[in-house]
Length: 101
Image (cartoon, rainbow, N blue to C red; front, side, top):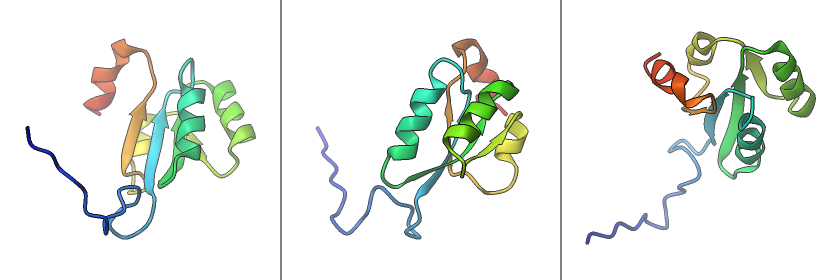
């Protein structure tokens, strides 16, 4: 068994440049609100964008998280360099297509 220890000088909760990890959430249906809450409260993480096809769900996001950008397409999430990671909270049958995007 090999054990790996992160040196104390490395902040595992931040990017090497010291800024928080910018995370996008795709899907705000059944599990999405829970993921959004946890990501929003997680140290070293900045929930930057939530994507969902439902205008009603996106309105809920904007009402609860005013500083978070919302969009309706995965292409909008992936455009530019505003995210470091993506959490997919859609039905399992859609995951493959989204990962390949």
